[in-house]
Length: 59
View 1 (cartoon, rainbow, N blue to C red):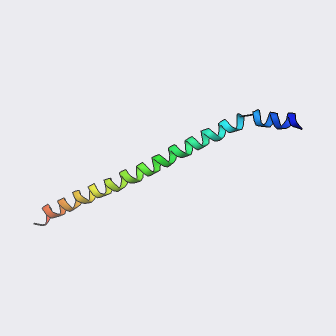
View 2: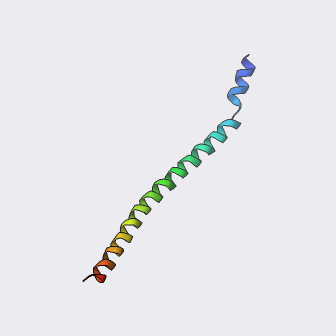
View 3: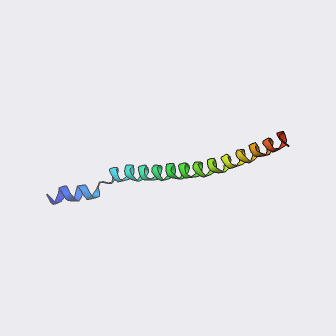
C-alpha cells in the first residue's frame, strides 16, 4: 500500500497537463479582456468619425 501511495505522489505526468491547461486558460482570458477593451475604444472612435461626418454633411 505504501508503494502505491509513493508511486502516486511521485507521478507528475497529469500535473503537467493541468498546468498547461491553466496557462492556456489565463492567456485566453487576457486575450478576451484585451479584445473587449480595444473593441470599446474602436467603437468610440468610429462614433466620433460618424458624428464628424454628420456635422460636415448638415451644416
